[in-house]
Image 1 (cartoon, rainbow, N blue to C red):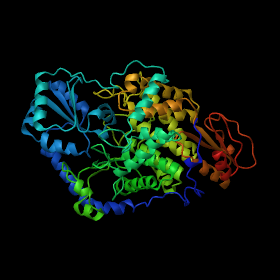
Image 2 (image 1 turned 45 degrees about the vertical axis):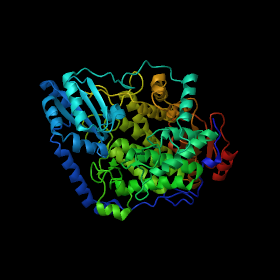
Image 3 (image 1 turned 30 degrees about the vertical axis):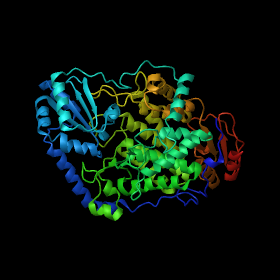
Image 4 (image 1 turned 180 degrees about the horizontal axis):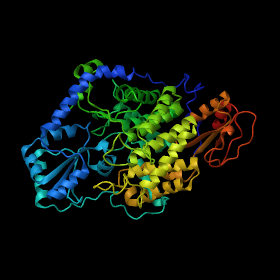
Length: 615
């Protein structure tokens, strides 16, 4: 296990999450939601109306329910044309305005197809299955659910007409099966030495040394690439990858409102696509908060703070939950680069791009995790309060009676893996932050639900099989996230089933054709690393009413290590869930720091903890 450098701990005078932390980067925390909302309503109504007008101009009789669409297709001997859109997507708006408004396209659809239109944010199972084809994604099915063709992105009317005509003439399925749809036989959980070396080579060779990030035309922060590099930043090549990538991706930060754009094109950071997605904000908030805590680079800290400011100003509702996205276009289908060049006053004078105010469990679970980890690493009191409020909202508004989490207030399908997985990750981070057993219980319940409902022969399905006419896929990113969640959870619970679930994820990920199916997948290396060793284990023993014990707990929280098991044992409250260490009886609170090989002597003050980690 690599040594813990004291530079990884962003120390501050932190006596409690509801007190000010000296030296910690704090959010400016924008004005209350109801005041912001009043100023936005007029412009949002204008944009919303224009979106509705663009959708209705097409005169395509869209079906919104996949069950009804396939039922109609069977009854009328038609094909199903699935238009999988994203409401924030520029090219979806263009396809609405040009392709689906074309009379020839409309005539072909009327004669031969059942048109099915679904917002991919509302259906994580379909988003997972077809993410390599979006957005927009076009998939045509036979009435029995057989995929005939899959197409990525915008198609001009003439090209789309030819595609539809060719399907009518010859509906034979194209051979386009993707990774995860037909996974191979499960393999043993551990990576072979050869595969591990190949993944490490790909990780380093895919790095863009000039701009940072991946060496690809589309530039974004690859969170697994950076998190793996941060975890091994005692090695010079990995530190360079992390530093250069975090520096480069700062260019995606909106300089006016904050928040990060989705990506940039052209192989650099200078040509952004302006949509802002909550799941991306959450991942960047987590990674930049980690970078800030480890290295205290002011610019990294500022990115994390500006992301949180943006989320609170534009996407957080009065119920503490967050919406899904903000559109890339002010006017749907029209590029908005000149709009985003303006300052706040200039932008608002023209209006505000549409906000999707749906509050999905998946996005909010990711935000919960990011908020809780930020609160711990950077002693951000307001982030801690937001995290607890968001955790309570998830349980009240999205928890299913039988366990797991629903996607929206009412779902057309589901349950979906993404929702329970993200909520479980968030609940576990909240337990690390607060040491309140109820959050660990919820994380464990989420893990059990995943094992019971989503396990595939190899890996995990994106949705429970047999619930929809389009079968769920096994998708690499989700399986990877499940593996890391269950592995860490197993150390908190001591349950072999959770460790076995993490191993089951690797039976999918360790297949060479899966592991090497993309440019790089450093996350597989990260999971394999974590499967081979226990997390850093830090514990406070003492009363939860004791100020000294709290100071020790806050000090341990500041250790910027994602793979960490942090607990607070108050002997008056019974044993820990996984009470695998026998701690001595002491007259005053103490902290213990355990690696895979050693445990510290009792540490009675924050300074003793710091000195121990230095040495």
